[in-house]
Length: 125
Image 1 (tube, rainbow, N blue to C red):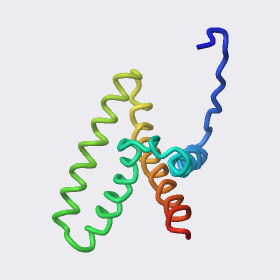
Image 2 (image 1 turned 60 degrees about the vertical axis):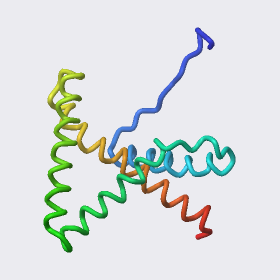
Image 3 (image 1 turned 90 degrees about the vertical axis):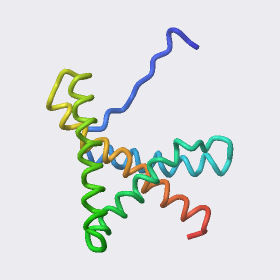
């Protein structure tokens, strides 16, 4: 709304810093929800579902190999699609490859932060 306004974004220089930022965003979503309940939308729950799906996938390796291989197939298709889309959009295979771990970190860190803050603030510890 202010045409001459400048916005500065701090760039994360490592995947660890990126993880911390997204973890904080997940935590912040719970705090926003506490004060503004209408600001928690279904889309904000998707990273939490992703975390649960990753845990189920890992546990399925020990419990049900069929489920593990089905989940593995889904992950291969999902991350192949991310790689292809990112490579095309950015005209760079190396960026396409970097999109795989960063997309995982984005969802996982946000989801972990979301669950951690939910446990701390809602369930009191």
